[in-house]
Length: 152
Image (cartoon, rainbow, N blue to C red; front, side, top):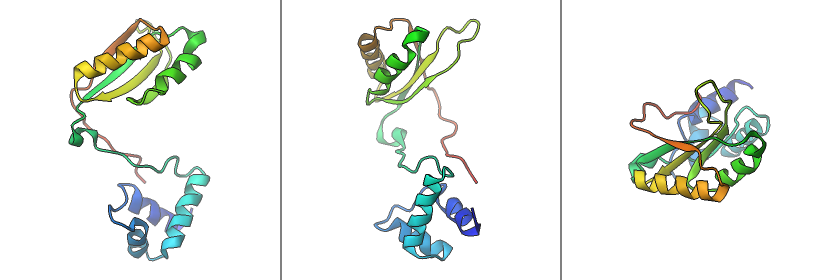
């Protein structure tokens, strides 16, 4: 990475401008042509410096206020199969395998977002039905303290 790449990362780490030509705005800010902004961003993604370049919606601001971490006790030999099914639900934004610990039997975790706690519970029941996993818990978010990406 050179100085321009660092400037580019700093100028995009909090999001790109919500305008018809966001990369043109960025190019004016850091003093390079718009096509170079795009080429450099593509290169940073290709080389793994930027893992993901995407959009994020402030779900609370549009009314999606029920957020639940569903914890699942999945037989180890079924984790891949069950994880793929769970990740296929559109309401699931994150699906992770984690190690079990003494006193904590859950090894698969899904984050579900919905408009109400009841809807989260319904989605968890649907996931349970689709996978055959009956041993699960639901942890609801109470407050969001931080939501930002990695900073340079």
